[in-house]
Image (cartoon, rainbow, N blue to C red):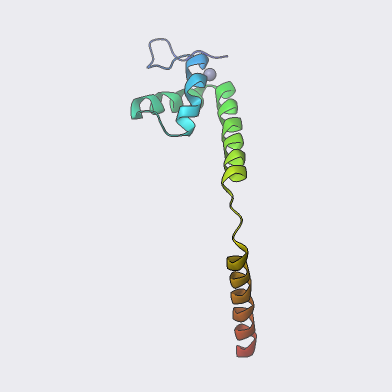
Length: 93
Ligand SMILES: [Zn+2]
C-alpha cells in the first residue's frame, strides 16, 4: 500500500482511492475527484492493478447482463440479407 505525496489533494490513501474506484469507473465522480483518483492510480501500482481488475469485471458483467440476443425474425432477415449480398457479389465477378 502506498500513500500519496503528503499534502496532496484527496484522496490521498489507497483506502480513499479504492473506496471511490467504482465511482471512478462509472464516471460518477466530479472532475476534481476523478483527477485525484487518476493521479493516485498513476503513482500506486497496487491500486492501478485493482482498478484494472475492476474494469475487467465490469466489462464482463456488462457483457453478460446487457447482451441481448437478436429476435429470431430479425436474425433470419440479417442472415438472408448477408446471403443476398454474397450472391450479388459473386454475380459481379
Ligand atoms: Zn494506492
